[in-house]
Length: 138
Figure (tube, rainbow, N blue to C red):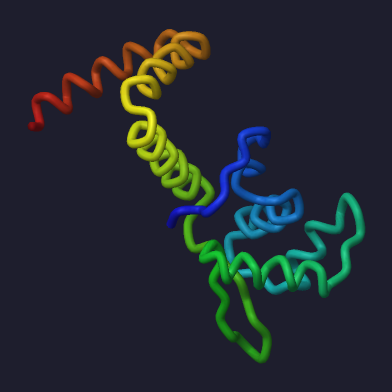
């Protein structure tokens, strides 16, 4: 699943979703079972009351984007995430990395290495191990 938009100024899920979409997705991911709009609205409205119709609209848009799925259960729809939060972030970071390397080639790789060293020097060691494993597997 590839999200169509990526926001450079955002953080975390805010790079892929609007603020209310982030709250809805976090509410969905926080529950072990599929959720009704009412249940999600109760979680999202803890900080600031939201209308049921607003949450319903956001959730149905997330279904249209392929991030949520819904099914009819006992006369009402229940919603669940297509992917776990971890899997979603993994797939999005993978797609973004592929796109950057495809578009910018060695510049993207060089800047990623620079960023890794600034964030955590141990990441370079991990990358070296992954490259060695990749070479062995070829």
